[in-house]
Length: 467
Image (cartoon, rainbow, N blue to C red; front, side, top):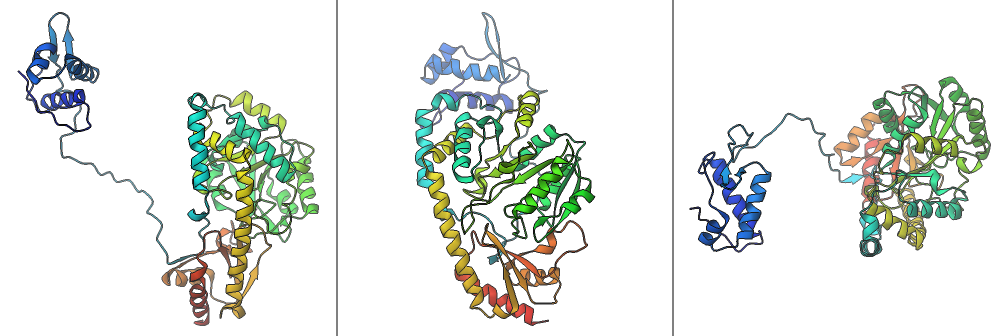
């Protein structure tokens, strides 16, 4: 008769019985085809209920360790051919996982959100309300484009903040812009040639490459992407950020915007992907009108994200499709499930609807304006002042710092790295070796520690003076 000792832990009693029998079967104490005690005798011998034994036997049967013979009882299954991992063994495969980024004393490339600035208490309150009041909706499958309440909230916000008239059904929600790029490729077609700005966000080229898309580039000038360069590229799709170009910070003027729209209208298959990644953070006046809002021919696909306005880890982005592309999306790709959880979608919808998002943006805009002013003042009052030039257009969360030096960017970056400073140069964002501007460095100030920057400026100054 099987006799076991059970403890008073939080583990249910039936689970303890199941584990004991399973262990005896795996170790060979109980042999294949050996008959197990009946439920009544097993329960009586161990001083527990027959229901507990029944639950344990049922679990063992479902996993294949035990089988039943009608009117005869329970028997140990033959598990000799069952794949088992011996106790105490481990596994280590030769997988080349990317190493964690090295830590630096001073990181001028960090564009993450300072945890102190995220509205945790409000978010937690809205999440609790969502779970309490929307339990049924949370368990339903989200529509392909995202829950309607969030799409309505975004449409209302864009109408009041950006002057954009958008039907909620034009909006598609996704977990990050990378996922949305994949949807766009399926909508527009892999036979199109895509074009990104040079210099520009290199990750875009990597994404398009993974989809086996032909991807070229077009140079930018002081007004943004060059239309002549667009023509030379032979592109069908132009991926641009007109309101605040990364990394140069250039804002495209109105006349160039209409020139780019005219380029798109020259041929039926041309489109513009307008990436408006940090449009909320403009220091002076309201954000400039989007290309989407002045496009009368359904040529612009608008994309934005909550990564800059809230936090990169929230992973909620959206795109707005022209009407005819929205119809294509729903006719061809409606089998896709939305990649953002309902919990986050409903919480964000409430966050926007109740005005918390607008208040947060206003608070963060003021914070970043002060942050930038303090940082620039710190530079202007340091020994670095006469050895640099600050280039900024009072928009977004970064500016350029041109250093007066002849040291090549890669050499200077390596010296800074040895001194514990991480920084990105403008030249590393060029997609060709021709025309790359040297000695321009990107200063991200969204999460910079201003108390340490004086020391940073002194180190940079000393490195420059070594030449």
